[in-house]
Image 1: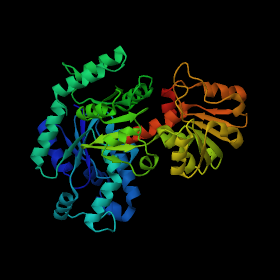
Image 2 (image 1 turned 135 degrees about the vertical axis):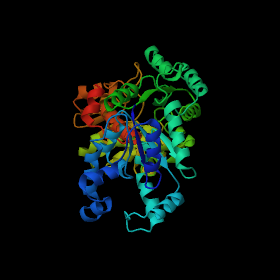
Image 3 (image 1 turned 60 degrees about the vertical axis):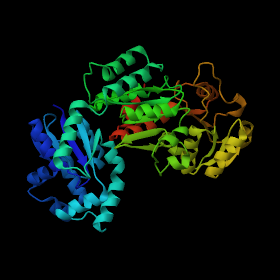
Image 4 (image 1 turned 45 degrees about the vertical axis):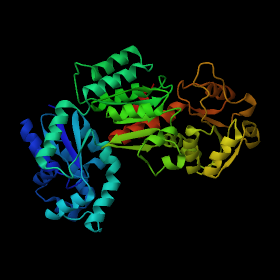
Length: 463
């Protein structure tokens, strides 16, 4: 049996429900907090008070690496999920059950079993603040989610057992999902894999689907990358193509199939925002585009990782004079990244009015492509789709480039686009779209699973 891991905030019932589930499955139960106290000979409050949280997390990390790999039910501490190394150990060949409850319920439960405070705030405020801080990590730690606010330990345990036995979606829903995938351009071998997951007889009812949403999106490298990572980290997931001309249809199917997440590509990065419950405040709202949707506990949250994929390869050019070609969803993410690096940015577009709209959002200059020679920038970033199709040409003429420039093409399929080949011929320094893809995919994987993948590992997989 795969090990069953319970995660969640204090007071959601991890220990009590975990014990009942372990008893019904006839396997051992381990509470990591209890294990820490046994191995150190000290109480959790004592470690926190005398040594601090950093020391406690180090002990917790060590204990988690010693957990059995199968035939066990485990309850983790409320903060265990914030450490990516913990997530790597816990997620491997396991099923993670996230328990949630509303703030009032958690407060009442904690008042009955007083525990040392983790902050200087009153209990209600402490719960609200810590839950908000950890929400992204909790959602990343969720294969299945159970709300324990208004249910007994026994009923919650029964829900867990039922999910483990039957999965979270019906056979009818699986049939509908399979019909949807057959309308896309999924290669025959991958379609057979989907049939094994969705069509009877089903080998594993706990396998979750994920995918890239776009139209078209059959060119995307994301399925091969993510499926390789699933194998490396022992994750029971399959990543495929959600290709359809209507984003509302994609989102409807994704919700019904209880998918873990979607990577969103052209042309839906802006339109998808109408079909999600919440947009991450940090970047996606300012950019006005979403390329990552996380599904958890009945909610959908949109993020933008494109800007991270643009920013990281350009850190050494902080403060440079830069030109951005294109004013769509990808361009918005690039503009956010470039202004975050303090670049003197001008946005150019074939339709200058579109460049103006985006430039006014980020407080930079704008114009059409003919302005490029006057600017003579240190850096050119291409955020147009030119280069994706076999018969595409470079968006620029030779006389608009010089060998002192750095050219970054965000198109990553193919990596050697007409613009990249042109820039190399002229002698420019070039950055291919593969670099953006690597960095934004790493961030997506963290948002989906809480695991921090080494950039070298991703680069090796996308070669």
